[in-house]
Image (cartoon, rainbow, N blue to C red; front, side):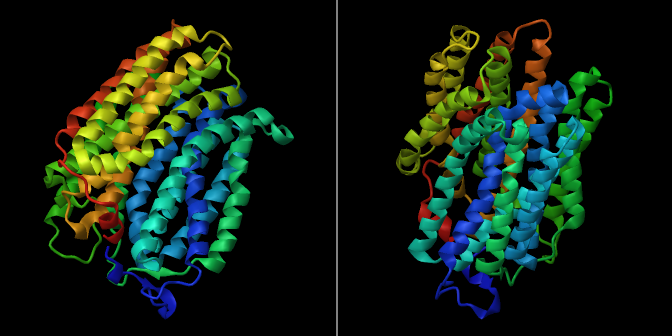
Length: 484
């Protein structure tokens, strides 16, 4: 989407700038932060949820992956609806629904109720997320737009650390006897404030050239993703029945079929979901695969890591959260250099980052036996810092490098697919790595299960390093990205 295609409703000139644009930006960033914090805040609370709701291993996996799966399924179609009906309208809808779903999650009395609320949370977050950048493109121009994008990216980076800390603090503080429920209740006033402030300060924007959303395609996309993830999550507990593999095959066939249908569509009245032509660009296909493998390795390993710390080593939620923050510290330290290095050295920086992540996970596996029950977390801190630095070098410049090979006019669609791949990869990682971890846990200790799971995460990051060699040699600039 280009700037000229986006108009502020009510005749407000985009070139003149919306007077309350920075207030609007703050409101929308706060709304987006609810989503990013919720990705990590729940991890620290999982052991408490397990104990309080008597949730089994599969239900814990669904609590994490259900959110990401719903987000992945709804993100692109929500962006299409925002272009057509108005970005403010969709953002406010998402914020309100997110608050209600958070309330429902906090009031849940069973694992099934919590999973249902998490799925609604994920869909609500997907309704909010694409509207933020779309609105920024409409209300900011030139250097201000780059600054707004930069602040947004920085805040999302901070959100992961805030989520880990907040999850530990709220769970351990046990405010009003709520325990883990506090990690969901905290979203309710934030969502209410975002909703009220958004009505007042966020302008309505839309794309005058927006096409009709592809609702049948969206249903096919969601069904295909569920068909792939559901059997992976449920298969271990059910003993891998015969229907598992045909269902996964049907899901993969559904994605391929959707891509083929969109590639053959001659009319341009319906907005595409998958941007099928992008997959013929080797660099884009490689970048999307990197995003999938990275998210799978990260989310899958941290599920096992968090459960090991709290259940295996009896760390308190706060102590576990503080330990995991070392990962964010490594990421923050390397973040400022990530894009400049990628612009200078290109794909080699990304490959190095992926290898650093693999080395960091190896460090975790080696150091795990030196922690001890409620012992010192320091043995695992160096590995977390190294892995976090690797994440910054791999993920922060990834979109910049890939979009160097993508036509500017479809850059927005490419970015949307990358976000979808990240969420889908996370859901797949929780399913696959959870199967490995919980499967090995039967008859073994939590430490042994973590060490057994670590090589799979290392393999995912090693795959990212290999795929990075298929990317362009250089990265596109931040200015180019914000102007596309």
